[in-house]
Amino acid sequence: MGCQQKIVIIGAGIVGASIAYNLSLRDARVTVIDAASPGMAASHASYAWINAHPKPPRSYHDLNRRSMDIWSRWERQIGGDAGITWGGELRWTVTEEGGRGLRDEVGLMQSWGYPIHLISPEQLREMEPGLLADPITAASFAHTEGHVDTSVVISRAFEQAAKRGAEFLADTPVTGFSAEIVDGEPRITGVDTQGGHLDADVVVLAAGYSTRKLASEIGLDFPQSESPGATILTPPMAPIFQNVACVHTPRDLPDPQMNFRQMPDGRVQIHGGTHDGSVGNESLEDAESMLAELEKFLPAIAGASVDEWRQAMRPMPGDGLPIIGFPDLKDRPPNVYLSVMHSGVSLAALVGEVAALEILDNARVDFLSDFRYARFVRSTAN
Ligand SMILES: Cc1cc2nc3c(=O)[nH]c(=O)nc-3n(C[C@H](O)[C@H](O)[C@H](O)COP(=O)(O)OP(=O)(O)OC[C@H]3O[C@@H](n4cnc5c(N)ncnc54)[C@H](O)[C@@H]3O)c2cc1C
Image (cartoon, rainbow, N blue to C red; front, side, top):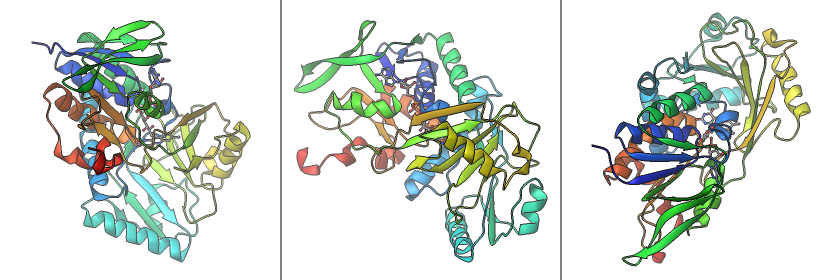
């Protein structure tokens, strides 16, 4: 017997897709609304590395780890072969100081039980003979990490949700909300879109970077970092990696720091930069020069062109941690579920599963307690 609440999810990126899928498993009445086409914002530009490395504090690391551990199950549930490439992540350093830093980080990760270990320069070269890695002062391999093709996952999840009755409205920006006071609380009763009004018993805000603006319209303010991101993709190339899925160039070299991966169809995707901003945010020329830079580490990339240049703002709450859940605060709408996060690809498998418990069963998942909206509200206010 399906749940009779009308649940409107705003945002059809990978987070909205996971929530819609998991709600539909319970036969909930779900409508997903997106301002554009599904999956074309941060989820499209994403480097889509599935990892928990190192991602402090411990509770955030554990959250990512828990999600990593169920990604393959989610892939099977939505029909299998959703473009995940497991194989692990490889990185190395070139300075003594960088080497000490990497050894410390590996030690910390191991004390948290994370499967990562140091490898010798010879092992690195044996694993990936195509890399030009010299000198090497330390190197590590995290064998449970991987990456995913977000477009495949999103379309599969929505296909499955649609089979179970979920409805989708693309090209339909949400412009506002209707509310009424119920028992002294400002309860949201529906959403206004450019295509008309929709009634809702529960509204899920999964609009990525735009969640902050939508939330602020209903009194849910939170700080957000301005973090423009970009990745580039080459045309399909012959297989580059022998063993690993993701490689990071040395972080103790002058910028750009680069991460690269090869997708199942042969395209190589490259991200350069940090969470403060990506190389290629501002111009295609920067992106092209980064590709040229990558040749120093990966000669096989020589002559490759930029086939796609993807840009998006990261959905990054001010403290870098996710916001997941109902606000659970007096004077805030009790029926708005927030789900905004960076590392949304790593976290997607888990977030939909736990959101379904909190939305449909009114459960409160204890390991989400560090990621609640209430942390942004001064305790005296409530
Ligand atoms: C360059 C880059 C690299 C990254 N690398 C990684 C990585 O390696 N690993 C990882 O785990 N994470 C990574 N991330 C972060 C990850 O991609 C995001 O956390 C994740 O994609 C967020 O998904 P989402 O569904 O919340 O948001 P989005 O994918 O941004 O989707 C939000 C959706 O909401 C819609 N929307 C917005 N406003 C409205 C409105 N008013 N009405 C209706 N719809 C609206 C948009 O059209 C969009 O489709 C990276 C991000 C970037 C940009």
